[in-house]
Structures are given as C-alpha cells and as structure tokens.
Length: 145
Image 1 (cartoon, rainbow, N blue to C red):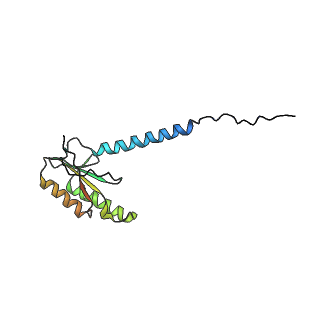
Image 2: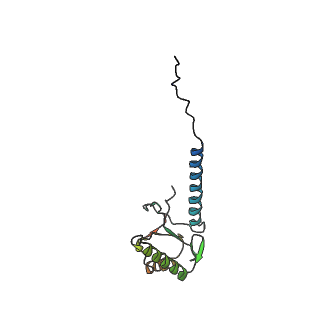
C-alpha cells in the first residue's frame, strides 16, 4: 500500500506586491512634498499667535502668500490684484459647474507677512470676497518658547 505525503509545501513570502506598495507610497510622498513646498515662501514671515489654532490642511485649499512689500503669489506665481481676482472667479465658476457643492466654501488660506501693512491684507480680502469665496483662514505660527 502506498502512503501519501500530506504535508503542504512551505509557504514563501511574495516580494513583488510588497515592492509595488513601497513604490506607490514613495511616489505619493514625493508628489505631496513638492506641492507643499511650492506653497511655502521664505519671504513671508507668518505672524505668531498663542491662541491660533493650526487647522488641518484641505486638499483643494488655495494658499495666497502676501509679502511685506505687497507682492501676491499663489503656487510660486506672482499675481496682481486683478489677475488674482480673475483666477479666483474662474475657480468659483469651475467649482459651480462641476457640482462640488457650494462654490463659496472653496477654502483659501492667507499667509501674510507679520510686518506687512494692513491695507494690502484688506485689499486681498476684498478681492477674495468679490470673487464669491467666504471660507478664508489665516496662517500663523506658535510663539517660540
């Protein structure tokens, strides 16, 4: 009588799926790192605040940098107030036509310089609100201890 060997062959660890996942994670972090670095400008010294809450970033948030000299930049490109108004109006129209909900809820974060003039800041606020955007927040940093 013949006796069969019922033991299973040893299980091997598959490396190909693991390597795929590692490369996908690497690509994801490289892409998101470059996007956030474009939004940070070293020429803007954001004001400090003890009580300011650092809200979590939203994926479609527009970051507007305002230097102390009144230079406006978004994603590394410099804009005049009129150009910024046109850009924001196009974003609102695109949000309305794509059905992303209420277009006035488009998040905008302003990174203004701590020693800049209030007049420049209020002019930018007017431009944003005239474009139909009301979800505006300000960037701040914690007070050094």
